[in-house]
Image (tube, rainbow, N blue to C red; front, side, top):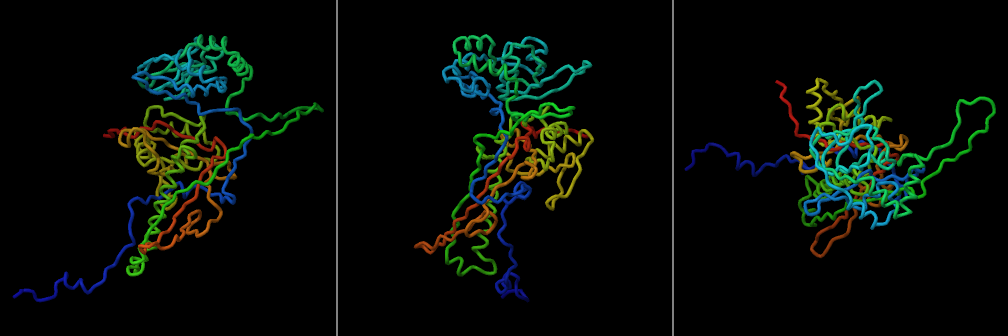
Length: 459
């Protein structure tokens, strides 16, 4: 005999319904990059970027590798030197073998200003800064360089004095080669000698646009210069890439358990989110068209101290100074920047964008994205911060998507019914087509080697 005098809640629940949510997914993020990019509808599946002719330029890095405990130069990457672009592989291997390894400590002067520059330095590991004495004797910072960068090619090629001094910021390893090795190579290889002479006589900087001859401020009736604007012979073309999967829903599930929530719709919604997340990750990190892999050499900035400081972001703004749209960074990098601002007493302004409060610097919002990669681990590794100008009219970065696809459920995303198999399972082909293009090199810049593990005691 029970002491109960009324129906228990557990028993009563058998006669009641429940209020449900749609399926939730922790992996959904705001995807600010996809929301902030202006999208161009591509009619033909191919987007061609026509530009003015530019003097040839690589990625401004000479890669190194470890071979049996010894650091060595990758021979093929010596083609970053303009007059070695057409050199034979055997000659490049000979040059690579002539590099010697040099270890350095923080604070060490690697090269002195005004001295004859008889060695080419390639940083394999570590950071260094280029400094110069100003007009009135003041000390000025020119640039911070890091892994893979080299100095000073022009002074080494011309055997002239180094126009700045180089001081190590961290311990590291460099590879050096004497000028005498290049001289000996030129004596034995006439094609290298001819390419070097052309480089010394040309005087133009790789990566600059071929000039347009103009006249201004003249008087009278002088003979005006005649000119034309030359175009690149092989402009870059962007083809649609994709993220794709097959969604499978059993007919028994869609027939019997379809209310109050449509099972197929719920499954498709979560799959669309997963495709969009993969799309944003590919736009940032894909080795061919990812934005991090398409930053021009002159648009790469190294952090001065490791942590992202206001000075570092100001330096980025000098690279994308024409209508900068937004920074894009990992949330941990944005938090690290906030700490550095707090330490200096210049907290960044908060502004509401895309329905969320976001940090801004100099009026430019910092958009967080967990797709920004870490090198060496997210805990103590380094990351990067992008700054970009966007829009086709602004000659910036644009997203690309097809103008129309069959069975489209969102712009550039199709859900195509593939039929029912012998097991009663309906399959849907889910495809997102996309790409991104950098129209002009100065629309994109990156702050590299950003450390996020610096904390400060404010007490």
